[in-house]
Amino acid sequence: MTTDRRETLRERLDARAVPRDELARPGEREGEVRCVACARRCRIPEGRRGGCLVRFNRGGRLMVPWGWVAGGLALDPIEKKPFYHVLPGSGALSFGMLGCDMHCPYCQNWLTSQALRDPEAGARIVDTTPETIRELAVRHGARSVISTYNEPLISAEWAVDVFREAGTAGLLTGFVSNGNATPEVLDFLRPHMDLFKVDLKTFREEGYRKLGARLADVLAGIEGIFARGFWLEVVTLVVPGFNDDPAELADIASFLAGLSPDIPWHVTAFHPDYRMDDRGPTPVSTLLRAVEIGREAGLRYVYPGNVAGLPELEATRCPSCGEVVVERHGWSIGAVRLREGACPACGTPIAGVWEDGRVPASRAGKP
Image (tube, rainbow, N blue to C red; front, side, top):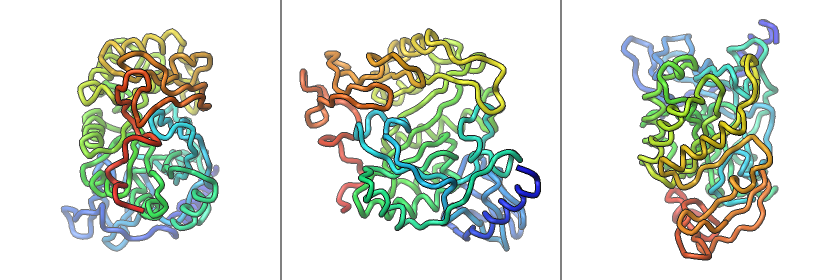
């Protein structure tokens, strides 16, 4: 995309932006706005943009993305997000926008996440409404509506309006996020949202600084997500030479197990993408070691991802007796043997959001 085309994209996004105050706070200077949608907490003077480049200050008001999606909508298996402990085999209507508060050099969704930052990035904009998204989800039999493809925290107001509509149809709602959240945005989301998949990218401060964030902020975000009762699953893309040291993986596993041994941890294989083409894919042996590390830390559900031929490890097993309760082959689901959210062999509850089990608190009592 040329510079001129990039400017045109910016103009198109700005024309669709709306003023919202839920995640805006007064700045320290006249006309300045502080955005609390992500942990960057950008101080945005009049006429300037936040670090995500899609939220900006116009006339002392925070302007945010609203009323469109990038590239359209997709009906995905819920396992693709990945949520392994949410309504196995169900469909998730997925939508996203443009932009991100980080700049990962290996991003698989860089065409959307790095729009307005990378002149080669960008996707077509499709105008839509929350009602239309809800209707499409119901028409196609989706059980959930998920904001994904770019960082959803930076369009939280749009997501909440979509999720309000989805909730009237009894649909689950969720984010696929980097977890760089603030308490303010989590409190704003919680009444309307059930699920959070978070990418915990590294456990080293220097690693996160390379990506445009701080480790402490992401850990605080994950802790806040868990404390508020969202259903949480965590993914670590294991990148050779970046975060694949066994000691670092052990630190991630210990952190998660310290929150809850029931948090599913997905350790997924890196494949060269975007600007990181200087190394090969993650060896399967590294993923198998990561699975062992997670189990040694006390995590009950650890899954390898982005590799074929490991159905035994992709299955969900009862942590007490080892019975297979959900069979998986990639994104395909085999038998689901749960009984009221528990193992049929020994009765041990299996953590998750199941057809006949746990009901998310945010949907209790809603149509």
